[in-house]
Every structure is written in structure tokens, then in C-alpha cells.
Length: 321
Image 1 (cartoon, rainbow, N blue to C red):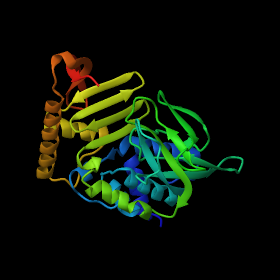
Image 2 (image 1 turned 120 degrees about the vertical axis):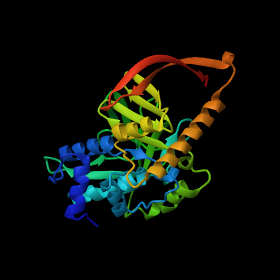
Image 3 (image 1 turned 120 degrees about the horizontal axis):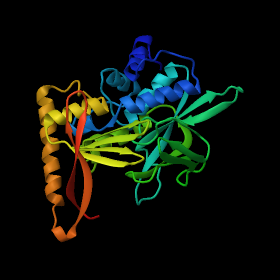
Image 4 (image 1 turned 135 degrees about the vertical axis):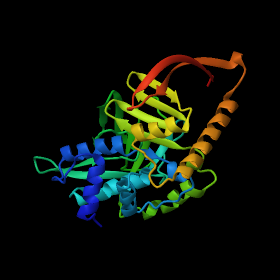
């Protein structure tokens, strides 16, 4: 299955001023960077109880319609685009390792390998993953080693969760420790259908309770969790609390390139009301005695027109971990 020229060019247009080129490493790198910058990893539709397909063709339609999705949709769509441009791509079963837990391959993530012939005529495999949100900016070779990207250091090692598999180790300070991948290629995304259903419907699904968006840029990453925006670079993290619907929607469109097309004005109102209510409940639950509080210094930013932010320094009391 390949994209027709209209769908392919619409996808390339969403990524920027791209045209079809031969399947080289340089082209893959430019496509990957543009994808993780402009098409955010997000749980909006799941949080809003809108069930969407993970079929790659449907995911491409979603992206061409100025929307996005999460790992199954992003890597599924990107794989279809790459194949339509002449790249050799395979799917791989994989799993995210939360902090403090053991590595696993549990089919809650799909990995991609891209094979590219180098100038010597040798086929080389690259880990390309636009579905990890705040991790890879560039593809990395399927070779054990350390890879510096925008001030953050990632590692590729062998996996302890699957014989012959590989592992991506995340930079310190993020919400998960790494990702493990199985070596066997999968023919399609049918293997992940039950996991997608779990994320969309199971009471214990984290994405039913958290609106989360993430994207990368050359110097770091952005995350919107409910009403809290974190901007992370190698020099530190700035945290902004969104206090109004207009601020929240404008920031989502400007920073995460998510204008919420297909959501009506009343849909956006309902989404904001739900997010802001859960945010206030979270803040209330976090209030404890002053003796148990630790002082954090955050940069609180006030939204201005033309995507500019004016920053003021304030002190926020947050509970000790």
C-alpha cells in the first residue's frame, strides 16, 4: 500500500517546503526533524472520547487535515509516507519503560526501522521514530553507541527484553527511561489493535485522564499536560500555567501546531472546561502544610499577540517529592 501523489504531496506540504526526492539519509533526516517539530504527539482525541483508527491511510488523512495523534498513528503514517517515497521500512513490536520499572516489550509502542543504501552500496538500518513525543530529533543508526542531539544524550544498546532486539535509552530527567524493540519485522499494525483499543477504552488507560501534547525542536522539547506547558532545553525547564481558554488554544496552535480542526467552538469549550476543572482538582489535591512544601522558581509567561511571551519571575510552592 502506497500513497497516491495527491496524498503524498499533501503530507509533504504539512511538513514544510518538501518535494519528493530519492530515498537518501539526508532526506530522511530532514523529514524526521520536520515531523517531530510540526506534528505533535498527542492524546487529545482519546481524552475527548473520540475513537480514531490506527490504519496508516486514515492516519495520513488525519495529518493532512491539520491534526495529529499518538505513536501508532504517527509512526504508521510516517512509514506509509516513507514507503511512498521509496524507503524500505519495517514495523517492530516495542515497549516503553517507565521510570523505576523494568524494560519490557508489551506492544504499547510500534517502532520503525528504515534501510538506506550508503554511498558504498551497503544497506544500513536507521531507527526512525516520530511517535515518541519528546525523544529523537534525528534518526539514529542501529549501532550500539551514544548520540548527542540538541544538548541531550541518547544511547543505543542491545535489549534485555528481547534476544536480538535493541534499546533506546532516554536522556535523564524525562518521564520514561527508554524503549525496547523486538527484532522480528511485522507486516502491518494489526498486532497493535488491541493495545489501541485499551488506550481508547480501558478504565486504567492513562490517556483517558490526561490531555498531553509533546513535540521536539533542535534545542529541546515542549510538553503540554493539561494546563501546564513545559519548555525544556539543555539549560533547564521553564514551566507555564495556562490560565484562560484563549491563551491555551493560541499556545496549542502556535507551539504544537494543533489548531483543533474538526473541533467546533462548543467542542473546544467542553475540552477546556474539562481540562481546567481537572487542573484545579489537581492543584487542590497537591496543597499540603507549609512545613512540607518545597519552593520552586518557575518562569510564568503571559501570552502576547504574534506568538511572543513576556516573562516574569515568581515563586510557586509545590509539594516535596
